[in-house]
Length: 370
Figure (cartoon, rainbow, N blue to C red):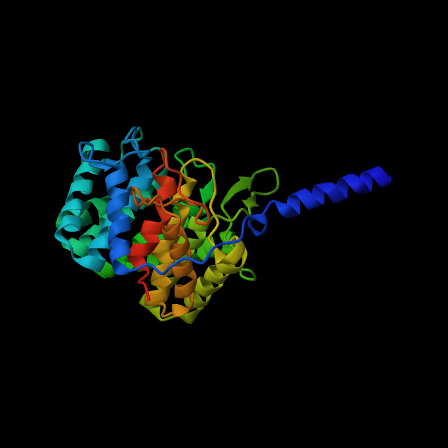
């Protein structure tokens, strides 16, 4: 019995020591500047963009093509750089990356189930296409966004029970399709003022909030499946993901801005506080994950926490995010000016994945330095 308790004690010690608190002390980082923000996005683009493909490669050696859905996030980063600086080079890239997507993804043919193999892949692009229209006023962006939105709605929305299916076989509903659908719908509403978009956004948000949102803690569940053995009850996976927290925050903030209903803003704040209090490592550094393509999660979170700060008038998150930026930028590979998802450690000097280098430059485009 004593040996059993000794073993438990040893295992507990190992587990408790496996944390960022046990890492070397975090050094104080110098504050980033507006020039640093330009340097970061330019270095990211230089390291990963393939001008022949007009899209981003998987690695800094320019091999392969990054996942279809993540290309939309990198496009967002370029659009944010343009919104911040109005530099013509970023405006040119908005059109160029659109063309890269057009050539690689069958002319944004949403019915092509070879290129678009799950619904959330489509919705990330639909959001970005709508944003491109907001910035440029070019009708081709809006045409593709609205066509894509109504195609996904027709194919994925569950008229009987609510919410959107994640995949074509309709066996799961995920936060990563439902909250981006709210964001897309609200972006299109802001452009067109068509109340149909606002109604759809409210409907999906209400269903998703009921299923995926923990109103006590502010955490967002990752997915759910129907358990047909028990009167169609739901099996919900309460795994938190940084990008789901982000799109929930964005959904709630956009609905608050459109309706003035403070309940939406309260939801967004609760979800943001959950990230700050429960999804960070030592010293408030945002968590990261090592799964396939998961290094991009913080870049998505950046888009929506910035929306809460600006549209929701919640500046209390700025210094926390600036600290994250300062840490990652101070640990960049200074020969290439690229950063890494593990902000407290030096960026690897060899081949780096595009997903893992995206968080810091994404944050720098939407969070202004002091």
